[in-house]
Amino acid sequence: MKLLSVNPTTEETTEAFEEHTDAEIESRLARAWGAFQTWRRTAMAERAAVLTRLAELLGAERERHARTMTEEMGKTFASALAEVDKCALCCRHYAEHGAGYLADEPIAGEPGHGAAFIRRLPLGPVLAVMPWNFPFWQVFRFAVPALMAGNVGLLKHASNVPRCALALEDLFARAGAPAGAFASLLVPSARVEKIIGDARVRAVTLTGSEAAGVSVGAAAGRHLKKTVLELGGSDPFVVMPSAELDAAVRTAVAARVINNGQSCIAAKRFIVHRDVYRRFVEAFVAGLERLRVGDPMREGTDVGPLATREGRDRLERQVADAVAAGAKRVGGGARPPPGRGWFYAPCALAEVPRSAPAYHEEVFGPVALLFEARDLDHAIALANDSPYGLGSSVWTRVEAERRRFVDEIEAGQTFVDAMVASDPRRPFGGVKRSGYGRELAALGIREFVNEKTVVISAAGNARASAATE
Image (cartoon, rainbow, N blue to C red; front, side):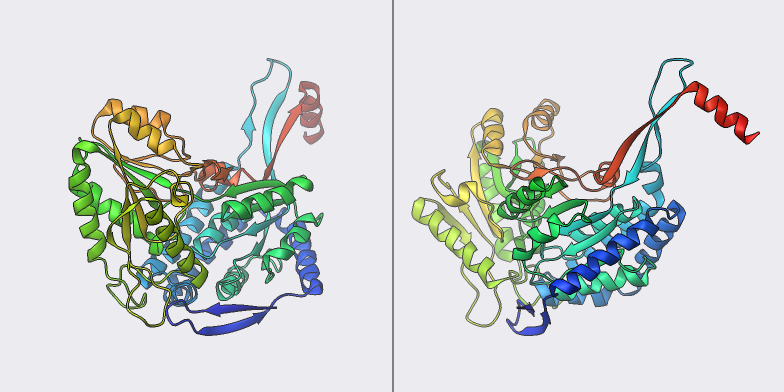
């Protein structure tokens, strides 16, 4: 089987790659295990130096890597450049703070009974099953903290971004990571379970769909492997009467079409208090219709194509099914004029009934669902009426309302008067069917370590001191 790199703008195959054979996978697993034996003993300062060199490479080659992302999955070139920069920020963050995140943590004990502490030690090779929508960033946010902690990384990237997968492997090697410390495995999803079962793979992380999370989580569970799952999202964007409406609308438009609408933390369900609902909808739809859809390499393009034909077709079905169930189209939505490219013009749907599949599913593309809330309680109920719980954005200047939203919205993140965004300095993850575990910041680097309790008796301390005198 060949893995094809297809340009979503032209629908042309750029390059084809043979999938790795069983022998090649075995070789990469063996090299990863060998690299781990060295890397786990490498000083923190040396690990940090590799990450710093990695950040420097990204800075020097940012346009090249951004172009690869745009050509392979269709994100705008401007957003691809920002993605490269974000990866470099992640490298520098963990180079600076990783040692502190992993430092021994004292445990209070009984006076005169010695010392106790938690030591954070690496687990081994971590297998990452990663998506195509942020083909560099999603990988960096697993790989950088994992390597800083002394683990090594194995990447099973999405099958439609093989050029990105190989570019990432090359970057880590040129930054000075030991041979085998980061390797890309060119395999289809059907071969992942066997790799998970290999004894040398000590943990698994996945970012992707709910179905993929169920599959990988079940396989890892059968082999008792630690997992972190970051799955789908149907994030609410709640607007109350006290909100600064112009700012809320501008942010809402950006939050719906970020990455051509293909982001787990893109705002998807817009829940607006009835006192400002009509004004918000009018301004929001006008904002969507002003967006420029087209060639993602062209300066000024706001929305490029969807990454795959299947994704575009699924989005069309979701919209058609919602309209058939009673939803009202309030703007946009027509496919651009005939021609190449998997484009879908941004649109909004109002009065989406619970019977419509889109009410409960993740809508992965530039389609917004609009809901009118009667009051604060109704807004919270609508926000939580979803199987997902990844991010949430709330717009209100009333402190009591802010407290209610922060405490009662079921999500891994709540942003007040701001768009949800990932950042290496903040923990990231979800609840409910959006997965479990956390990435980034201190929590992220500690997901794949052995939190070992160490107790040293007072007598042992005295003997050790005597032996060194």
